[in-house]
Image (cartoon, rainbow, N blue to C red; front, side, top):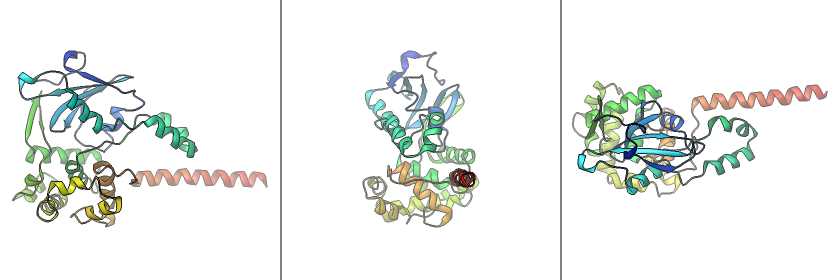
Length: 289
């Protein structure tokens, strides 16, 4: 089976009304939130969502999607249930236009730059995938994290389907990541010290926390409670090296929207912006003298 494009197989695609100003696939899927999407054809992004392989593309007003099913008898457009999964993944019930308008009203700098970054929104990711992906993100960059997550899935995730020369896998289960010799295997795959945290966190959730249900219920827990619980996992503690991981999980995996992430690049950008503002105020003050 081959990767589809909208023009080559239009009968197998469905669409969701979604202006590009509400979602930019290129900015969202390659921004370091998820590490499992690839632009296999120009403007066509393929990846795994809800244990299925998808290809997504868009026009100015529509989001188009197609799903690949292993059973050839089930070939067809995405079902309503599948479309709902995609809708939730991109949190399309949240209006970016309203949020951007509010943020612009309280921040003059945001008002100036917002037009350049329309369509940037948060993904609502599976907590398990989000947890272990961000453990891999410690002291890392997007390209290397993407490679680590891909090798992790190839080694321990169930095979889904092959498209062209790409074999897609689901994200591994907690049981698979907690298995014997997992840490040693992950080290061979290039995860380094992160291999220990992947294995240890999977074991802790299964043996001490109550399994997958514990992780999923943190979505409904108060912020402080969920934050404290996550920080008990190996590799997601409060030490400086890992403090960003907990914030990533709170926001992207547990939908705790009051969690605000500030990375090193954002800190430098903010410092430059504030320095520029202070310089402007000083210059104006001197001029008035």
